[in-house]
Length: 225
Image (cartoon, rainbow, N blue to C red; front, side, top):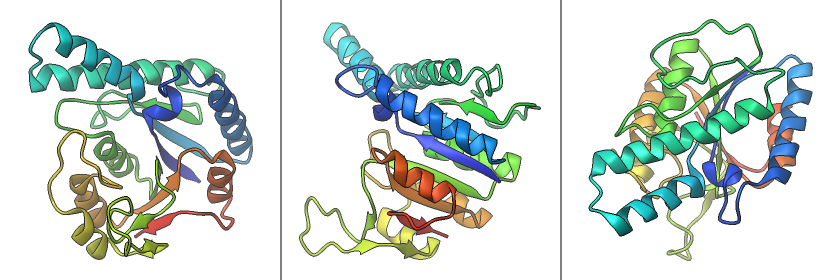
């Protein structure tokens, strides 16, 4: 089965530096799943690499929105190169930086990263799903579930295990901007709904939970379909 994994940059480059422990666990899991016959597109975020560069730039000079976006995009690509390097024995030799340009990959893992200003990595993931006809996108997030409201602000927020796209889009709205605090990009959500894709939201820190999801076992997370 083919999966698209959207890997948050904070997993690769958290505040404390590159998380080699997580990367070792992630490599072992991907090797196991590839051996079982699965194939993957993996999209990387920017994490603290992005934030550090943005912070440094703004302390020196006025940063335009476009330049800020490009710093973030290159951070995702640096993290992507790191991931491709540690999966070099099973990964395609090039990183996808344009999801609209199809490639022919003979290896079971392909790494992708940010494309251009105004496009979130969530949106890149959905475009890849469309171009390569992949039906399931797994988004590793900083939450275990989608909620009816922001649980940090509202005590009456209720967790959701399964939700239809129409109902999910009522929660996240129709606009996206860099830094938006939403479980999944609203613009990407609209396209995913049109394509009838399944998106699974998982807690990014629990590698065993991701394994259960990939192996069709019971897992903790939200299914949007």
